Amino acid sequence: MAIDKEKIEYHIREILKALGEDPDREGLVETPERVARMYEEVFEGIQYTNHEIAQMFGKTFSSPDKENRQSAVVMRDISVFSYCEHHMALMYDMTVNVAYIPDGKVLGLSKIARICDMAAKRLQLQERLGEDIAEIISEAAGTKDVGVLITGSHSCMTARGIRNVPARTTTTTFYGKFADDEKLQKLVL
Figure 1 (cartoon, rainbow, N blue to C red):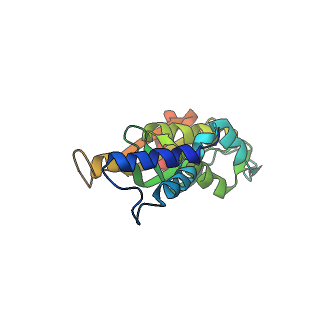
Figure 2 (cartoon, helix red, strand yellow; figure 1 turned 180 degrees about the vertical axis):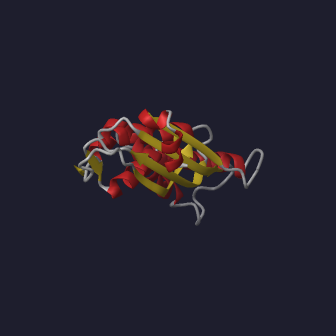
Figure 3 (tube, helix red, strand yellow; figure 1 turned 90 degrees about the horizontal axis):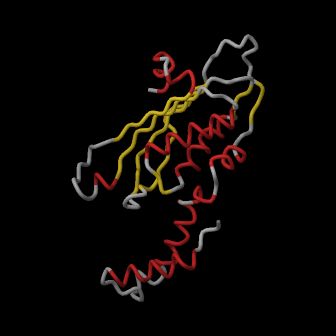
């Protein structure tokens, strides 16, 4: 489903009015249109299922591990941001670590970062984001063995409510061999 920018513009204009602002004043005249364009960009992932994202970024190559030693591919510190589905508040300063054990093929490295980025472009919970990334990596790489760690700040905690600025949230998702093997989990942590 395509993002309806016209509806977003209309409703942002109405929100500005509800806040007591004048949407026709100089600084706000183009705000509804700017917000609609921003939403189209930052919520792009809403338009795709996990399966579709795996298809989009599933470029793989034959695994160089000819002896099938179960070596892992690990990518750390992938930068993403998302929006909390409870307050539509920014989840920021987020880093994702991903590890997987190839099963005959490996993903192109940029595809791992693209998968993380696209999965984050949804109204999300951090816990679900980890699950989504693991599911997509699993399908795209053709392996059941995936680990994901996400650490980030949530503006619903830092800028409102409790206003605990240094608070950071860490979540882990472990599939396959990562679920029970502490040595593999440490690759992600």
